[in-house]
Length: 45
Length: 158
Image (tube, rainbow over all chains, first blue to last red; front, top):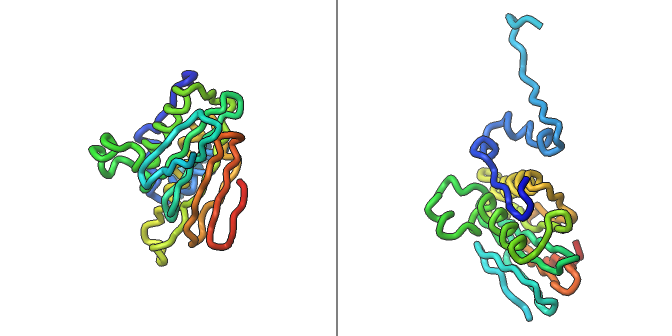
């Protein structure tokens, strides 16, 4: 972060209109940075 | 001296006698920033969350949109001598006055974008009065940074 300079949102950060983005917003605001992805049946753990 | 911050406008000041005031905060967002060390502050009244819906309007008037407006306000107070680590941020508005069915959620989205930008700039909100269905008026006293929100139910300091 540059002192004395305001930082803009990136284009990715601007996107919050879909449900997933909205549900993860608070996690990101808390700095956790986690996004829980739903696993499919065929996906190996 | 009172300085009115109109809809889609921002004002900054470093004069102790000034009071910045913005009226008619419905789904719009009002943000005050104040550096108590430099005694520099500013206020903005943004209408819509994201400038990508009309980049030309955002270019002509960044204060219309929350994403471009907050950045412009931050830069303006930095240019007047405020320091990031001293800034006290207070927000009001983000209600849902004309959207009873919640189709557009302008207030909620304005608030989400505000928090994103402030977080990205390492600034936390110190006080807020957001949501609901009452229009608000917000005052920032430059002498001491006192921020007051007035509704028809009364007034409170943030």
